[in-house]
Length: 190
Ligand code: SF4
Image 1: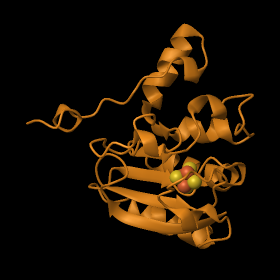
Image 2: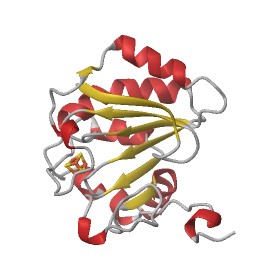
Image 3: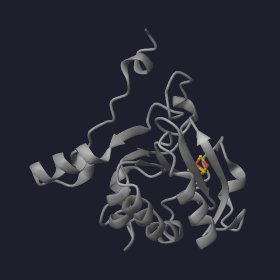
Image 4: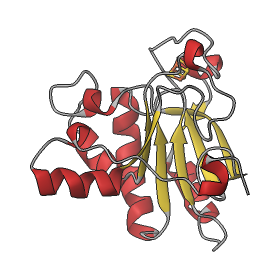
């Protein structure tokens, strides 16, 4: 797997202060893609052990709230395989820090039988706290939305969703619980 960029102290891609990893490669080709150069799987640099260690180090300070995965498309099958071991390392070392993941897939596409379900998906999703799902749709663009570009995209609280899924005995996609933003941001009022 290659990555195109790492942003440190990022406050635009998830709650709080984060390290954001932009992986390379996406086959979706959305019109008006916000990051066209990252569609190329060969773009950027190899994601190797040294890069993993730099990111882990960046997560150490108390003021850093967690890691964000985006791209490109973290849920392309080859990127899932490239990420899963690393994300498990992050979760193991920093269990109280959150992991956000942005994907153009909807959650049901990542479940068994879905187009992007692989042998790595369940392990990867098990480490993710917040999944921002769905493709960017220009017709539903809304500048007032936080952490997403278009209204069809959902910010899913995967921990609450897992609990609801287990309680009701249904797949995650049938038990979706949305992340609750701070009212100051969700209503744009003080
Ligand atoms: S899913 Fe994201 S990276 Fe892929 S084409 Fe769409 S906007 Fe671009």
